Image 1 (spheres, rainbow, N blue to C red):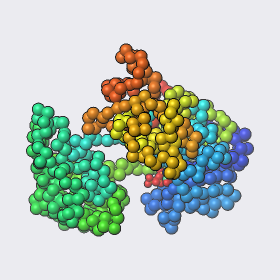
Image 2: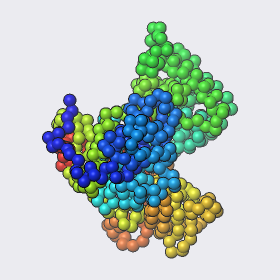
Image 3: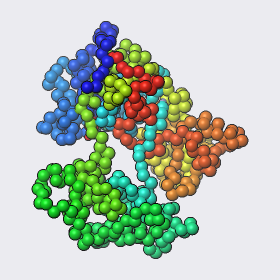
Length: 608
Ligand SMILES: Nc1ncnc2c1ncn2[C@@H]1O[C@H](COP(=O)(O)OP(=O)(O)OP(=O)(O)O)[C@@H](O)[C@H]1O
Ligand SMILES: [Zn+2]
């Protein structure tokens, strides 16, 4: 059995014991870790707690969020968590908010009332925001997360440690569009394609999720020319429009996606010189692929979810799910894919397996497809409980400002090299001096096509989505021009203008200010024109020193970096977080430590 060293008995500092009942704590999130933390806080004598969660209780939470019972399903998590604790101990003062911590109701003054903030969240957006609020309010924040059997607890304290955004986060795993549309080679490629197909037929329009063959695939070109002429390109008609025109006829849909489109792919001969060519499959032929004919109980979960369906069964599930989803779609503008929605999951499982069959890729059970499609890493109650225990242990230490005793700590699976499952950094991790959030003068370079990107896109894509601002005000430095205002009605006229129309050009400096986060960021604008189809629309580069170093190296002491330079220098730049949002992932260094054995020089196994 895995063990935690317990040679050094832990006792709570007498001063901390005194402070516990007098301290005010904010807990953000009442999910897997949050419920455990709340219970620990109440049991260890904290008397003044506020808890916030935007969500309601789902049946799937009940196996590990022990403050919730069946009768609570559908009710707000924070409210029920409070009631469950009070039922055991009515002497604790708990205030519950059923709300998002991102709301402007929770500004600097709200945060400043607390001695400690504890995060128990599941997404980067909220984590980044609380990070900024705690830096601005100068309140210690304990950040925590689990992923399966792994987890981590990290102190964030202005001036003493790095912040949550000091290091770039690893990008979410994505696949090249051509692999998904033309040349899948793994089950996951077929699953991604099927999720895109769902969105094309029933979801919100997203041009990045095209499922039709991609004639622009560089691999398919012959002497630089497309191997198929434009008139043969299946993309002529919008998939959704065509699907509506044929009234979601499953047989026609099946023949288009699994036969006609595949024939089209076959005509791109270059693709199949070194690969097994796909086999087009018609609706009629699919019906014959019945596989194992032994009579099965179709109602048993094992048969339904755990066994790999025959292709005939996939075709039938495809038709049934299309019919159901068509009805659901009739009442809504669009459907949102959800792994727990049966017809949506059936559709993806069936399509993924049919496509896998066509491309000679191993087929999977619905259960396996669900876990890949939903990016499900199982949440483990004991991992949450251990992390929540450490969170509260660190809370005791923070009350007496014993920061040095709160280095980042990692829960790992037991390895062959060690009997310990906890390891901690030897010391606190210092802040990145050029962090675009916690450094004294936050600064970033943004590379963008100033003639194409509109002010609205700049606000939503760059400032909000990428740089995680909530309500930015933007002024063009030197000219005093207000480009974006967080006050309604002030700058809407600018929304559809390209940046250059407002004199925002290569070399311009923008002062971006988020009043809610008490955060000011200087943005240097660099003209950049995406060249390749898969080039990002814009890039954000955090470390200006590295840019300068590169320019000097190239013999260019002055002048703004041109778009060409930006591209060729890319390897040397610290590109921040290209794609966002993977719930409980830590920074790349954290991930390394989570997976590593204890021989890492910077960490020690933990005697608490
Ligand atoms: N902006 C936010 N404000 C307040 N609470 C949030 C915010 N974002 C996420 N949360 C909450 O953080 C909690 C994280 O808990 P957890 O990781 O256990 O997720 P879950 O939704 O309960 O479970 P799962 O995602 O595994 O189904 C959730 O209850 C979620 O509602
Ligand atoms: Zn930082």
